[in-house]
Length: 149
Image 1 (cartoon, helix red, strand yellow):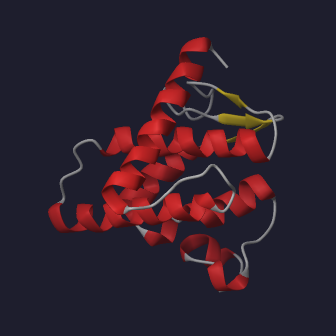
Image 2 (cartoon, one colour):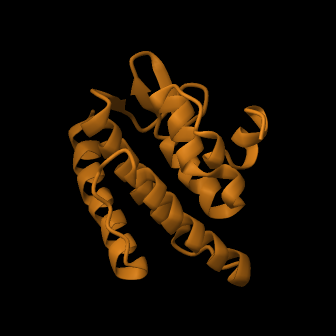
């Protein structure tokens, strides 16, 4: 990971923690289960967006929570490589490589903020990071349809 992206990851994940704590009283502890809490925060912000249609700062918030997800994966799953650009997805897509496979936490967070619960983080985290279906009671939205709920 380029040194500037490493520092950005540290700074941005701390901002995600702060938004969760100060804005919603939610503690983010870098555990796998905390992805559900991050999703809850983005869900509340989505509700606000639906009411106001004001998306000022939302790309920054998506990036902060993407950085948080990257740190959770590093801590709990293993080494990863985070880059700025992806050959197929383009500049500033911020792919996260787990081995040869790329996932896109920044895209996940952006979609969660704008599109709502159909794009929940936990389902994507289960499928793309943990390589397992989410438990049946937790299947939501698009991925839930894929897996039969």
